[in-house]
Image 1 (cartoon, rainbow, N blue to C red):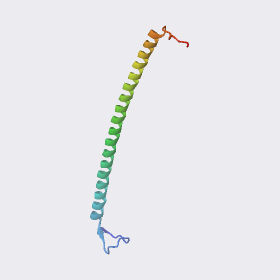
Image 2: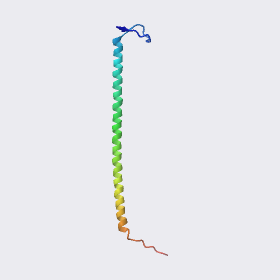
Image 3: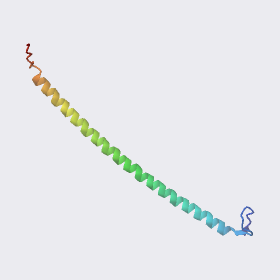
Image 4: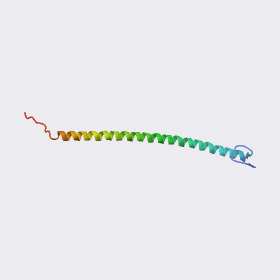
Length: 90
């Protein structure tokens, strides 16, 4: 069985098997290219997630340092709180 496609510039008939083969090949090529795009996107998402975790870890580390310094500052204030500076009047 052959099918005639009047919109094609080719005069004559095109076998159904060839049209089906072209359609299947186009589908497979589209599927493979889409998988490549998805894989690339997943890699980028994983990279960004790792960067976010690294940044979060750095932030927590800096917050711990701030907390330690504030505690040390409070201890020094408590120890030196009773000492009043002497003011000299001239």
